Amino acid sequence: MGRGKIVIQRIDNSTSRQVTFSKRRNGLLKKAKELSILCEAEVGLMIYSSTGKLYEFSNPNMKSIIERYNKSKVDPLMNANSDAKFWKTEAASLRHQLQNLQENHRQLMGQELSGLSAKELQNLENQLEMSLRGVRMKKDQKLTDEIQELNRKGNLLHQENMELFKKEHHIRQEHMDLLKKINEAKDANETNRISHSPNGFNPEEDEFIKLQLSQPQQQNYVTPENPTTPR
Image (cartoon, rainbow, N blue to C red; front, side, top):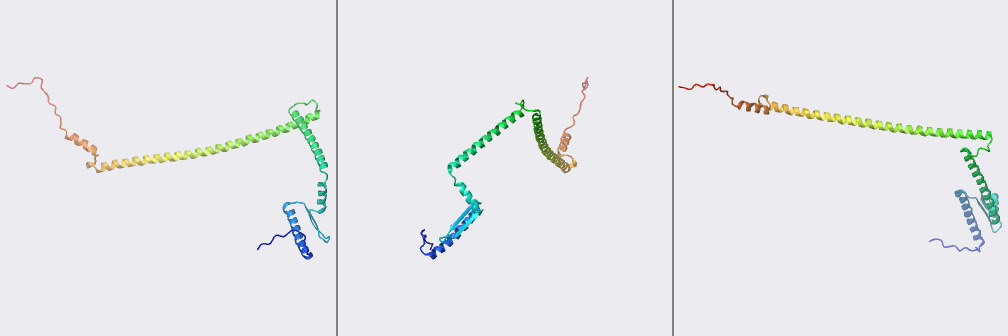
């Protein structure tokens, strides 16, 4: 069975009250310590028992916490006036910085130089030369990086071209080997046909010879110009 809900009211029994105070006090001090460690919070805890005994915990120390507490409890109207004065001063400082930056920018652009002394002009010239040197160094670095990147891409393209050339050469070689095998196979078939025909002739040539031999010889008869009539 779960514990019943405790009614929050004064404990009449002094012994029970003292036991409860001791337990709750230790738990409260433990929680305060954990809160200060886990959350990096400034914690100040003071407990007075019914007998007037003081129990306390503080992080970092009770004096600084109390001073901070007292400062935060000052009249809110005074705090508001102080904040307004602070932000007014801060705005004036920022405006002054902006004016200086704008003036410096105009001078770097070669404007409003009449009020500058020779030394100030020399300092401005040195500043511009240093800025120009930095710009040139940055530009050279950019160009160098771009050239290196182009060289890297060129090397990759060259390697790819070499690979393609090797593949093309390999395919051409395979094609030539295939043609060679086809020609060899054709020659072998031709040789087999000749070797299996009678007299070692090609059957087609043998048939042609037979046709020539079977044709009769055509005789030429000479008709005399003046035939003699038999008597």
